[in-house]
Amino acid sequence: MNIKRLGIVLCFFVLFCALGVGYVYNQYVLMECCLKPGGFVLAAAAASEPLGVKRVLCVGGTAGIGYAVATSYLEHSNQVEVVVVGRRQPRIAPEFAGRLKFVPADLSKTSVARQTANSLKDEHFDIILFTVGFTPSGFNRTSESIETDLAISYLSRHVMLEQMFYNGLRSSRVFIMGFAGLPKQPALNDINWESVPYSFFHAHMNTHIFNEGLVHYYAHKTPSVSVFGLNPGLILSDGFRGLAGPVLSSLLAKVCPDQNEYAKAVLLPLFASQNLHSGSLFNNRGQEINPGPFFGRFPEDKAQIIVAGVNATLRDLGLQS
Image (cartoon, rainbow, N blue to C red; front, side, top):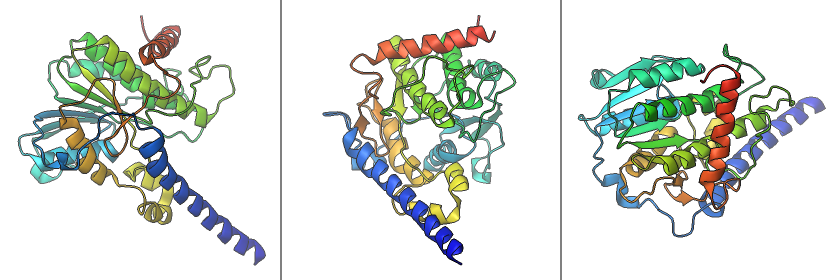
């Protein structure tokens, strides 16, 4: 009986801690500690502004936040066409038929990511959103011998963007989702976890820092395309609800927005805002935040180190010439 009571107490303690962490991260860390002085702030009235968007590409748009963005655009205007890329066929409501295109792709493979980018090279997109990701539960490698989280949560974006820019990507706005501004240092000495002891937490944090690096790298390298980073904080997405379970999800709903609210109230008006500077990072209220401390005052230099290290790893694996 005492053991049972102890278990119940521990469960409530875990729930309380999760609720507290969600509240502190969303309301304090992202809203106050990371805000960029004088940076862009999404106006409350922005949601009513015309979007001016005709074609949207959501990589990882078959579920979660990416799918919420896709359907929000389709609901907003019958003039918008959306292409979603992912492994599973998304739900397509009858009213969206013909305007929502599905491109099947297993983006855990760099070869598929590159092929997918090539298959889209003749199409123009006003907005390109990368949300594809993976939450690791242990150490695994893909068929290309890449640590799975690295492959899906970062390399899929790295390879697709590299190929899209090589194919002549112009005049699009690219948004890369992750925990931009993360106050952590990356592990750069063994990106693919070949020799150092594996830590799923450090591996996953690496992908977030690397994704921020992509923002700074391409914002500096390609002035013809605007590139931005997104930190949604804790959002009740489809994937998070599946991991958290119904009880914790219902509690976190008190302090965390869900994917549809975030897409409609923040992302769509943010994507349409005219006063954004390439390389900027935004929290889950559309407020500009500072780069992570690793990137410092010259983020493009640190981003170059990350990109060069990743490309060296791909060459070592025979996946890049």
